[in-house]
Amino acid sequence: MTHRDFAGIVEEYGDMVFRVAFSTLGRREDAEDVTQEVLLKLWRADKDFASQEHMRFWLIRVTVNECRRAVRWYRRNVPVEEVPERPDAPESRELLDTVMALPEKLRVAAYLFYYEGYSTREIARLVSAPEATVRSRLARAREKLRELLKEEENL
Amino acid sequence: MKNKAFMEAFSDVKLSGEAREKILDAALEDGGKAAARRVSFRPLRAALAAALVFCMLTGVTLAASPELRDRLWGDFSGIKQDMEPGGENMAVYDGVEAWIDSALTDGYITVVHVAVRDTQGDRLSSVYNDVVASGGKLYWTEGNALNHCMFYDSGEGVGMSVCYAPEILGFDRDTGTLMLEYRTLNAGFSGGPSQVSVTIDTGAFGTERIPGERFPMEDETVIEQIEQGEQFVFADGSGYAVDTTCDYEITLDTSMFTSMFDDINSKTGWVLVSDVETLPLREGTVGEASVFLSDIGVTLRGKSGTAGPISITLRDGSEPTAAEGWMADEQLGGVYDEIVRTVCFAKPIPAQEVESFTVGGAAVSFQ
View 1 (cartoon, rainbow over the protein chains, first blue to last red):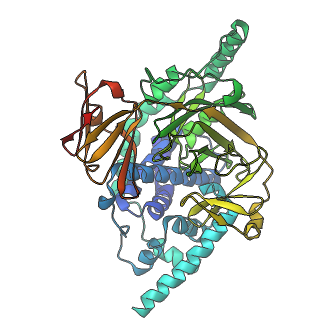
View 2 (view 1 turned 90 degrees about the vertical axis):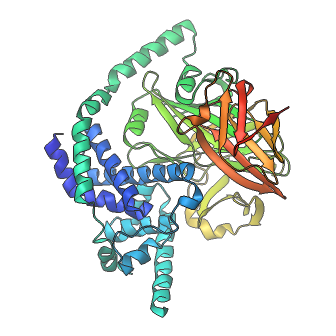
View 3 (view 1 turned 180 degrees about the vertical axis):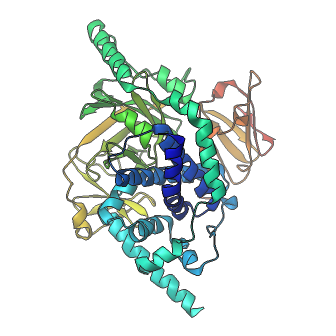
């Protein structure tokens, strides 16, 4: 892979990787770090992908794993009192705030389903959880979102 | 909220131009390194195969331990076990050997190392290079995740415990071995487990556990692993369950999970059982707290005096706690009116060589 090829991949998939990381970690700077790590892994691996879809799948799966690693690092190295209670929203958008208020596992499942358009079966493979668990997470995400939106309406 | 609204919510979440530039610059800087890191696995496989033939001919056991473990985890001098592949602590499935390389406890902390080696291909190399998962999942080939976890019975009154979050210590290209570390903190107060069982399975739900004193079970009993909400629940076929987060028994209606019971009998993968070596403890006090120090970690118990940064100086003047990442894990808990703080070291620290130990600036006085 040439640097030019890599630049094209960063252009095409950078936002997607960043969004997956952001939807998991909820903090822009952490999501940027993970995005860099994931894309550099791709650069170093110099893999041959069967298709664009294969590469997209690979990128999301590596991102999910890198985020897990980041969460573990946080748990080990950052005192609880220094961890922000709520994620930073990059833009003060009500809708995004509401989505980001969901528990991490629910918002990642919802993001991959609604935004990236993956099926529950594909999400199960991406996050390595049983498909029934993914379906349950999506159902809970919808229910929780309804509650949150209702709360905001009543405010 | 439908997908249109979701699209709108995330439409402004984008990688900044600055971050994009940084990634491209890093790739340029990384160019040489990337080439150096790319290793052709085939010659290594050939070397491994040759080594295996040599071992078969000479009767020498090809082992990852203790050198590999020392390299990946740190100096095991004085505490290492001489476990080798083979026997009860090893299982082979689908051309992959897995064995418990080391199982240590000091009564409060249990650390188990599992080595996994592919004898038929380079699947582990791919795992390590491409997608190394954490949080209890190890990806195998494309789209196929393996569950792996450690069970043990920590004695009467405590019951079965489980560790879901192994750490992948590293991949040793010379021997084609992946080394995993499982650890638990505040395992119990009855001397630690005498035996552990590690399962790595592809069936996701079917697994076994070692019989415990509190929940004696037949060898063939199958336990179900179900993620219910944010909790893991183990249930046997009779609808009896143990909530591992609370350590109490609950009755579970298994009909709720019928869709998840498809693989109940597909026990494919590895089940590894090993005795655990108990490490000696150096006991001391700091303020009103008791201190229990071993090579793998330290536990502080007391109504007070357990808080604050830990500093350790060895007889040779070195300060292992000054190094970044010296702590692998820390857990705070309470038993009755006591605070229990357990710290697991990232690498072993020789307890007998500790000359000075302070907690929050106060010196620990050893017996």
